[in-house]
Image (cartoon, rainbow, N blue to C red; front, side, top):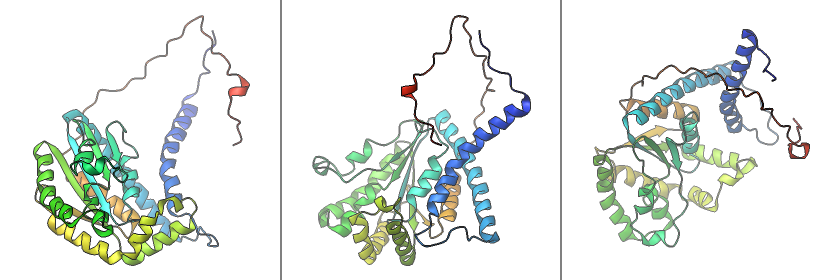
Length: 307
């Protein structure tokens, strides 16, 4: 019976270190995506200050993500139900913040809800009905990448709801959210705030980056034209749906990195989580059977190793 080759301690630790480093490369890949150079623009021009800024960002991000793992363990151990709503203009950075929150977490515990426009059947339902089906059970965290506040924003500005439906939304939403809180759901609401100029620059970046052009829809472009209408709708939303049981929190998001760190730090401070004691994990010995031998994979089934 063949045995696995024995690894000395140094080689073993090197391979473990490489595996850990590989898990952090995902963040580096997203960072490179954020800084994808425009055609004709030279990259790599960051000075020492920018490099130090990025180093500090990664250091703080990984620290906060470790706390998010502790939060996740507490949610599961205590049966918490958490809803976090992310709202903001197009290109405000909601998606990037959500990615960093969920990056190290178990998708069975922490899941993202990003609903498309309602279909014909959903438009005849109680407005909140399609959101209710995605609310968490005990031991779950749900992040809404846009939420029922679509009615306060895009539906109001683009005329997808009637004035009566709009007013009914504001009569209902405080009571709806109070019901959620009374049921035991912890509800946090974040608005990501960017300037007119910053959205203009981010839209230009998406137009010129083939990897991000899919993010620009005709609705996004129309929202750019109607900046002031969206501003008025946002101001009304913050005024009419800011309640003691579920208040709004505004994240200054012109700087994406600061916005992510500030949002994660803030949400952690809103929840009374603690470190959950766990038993020591011991890797068991693998069972070996005398008459088992691993079969070779047929060559025609193998993916070509081009890299």
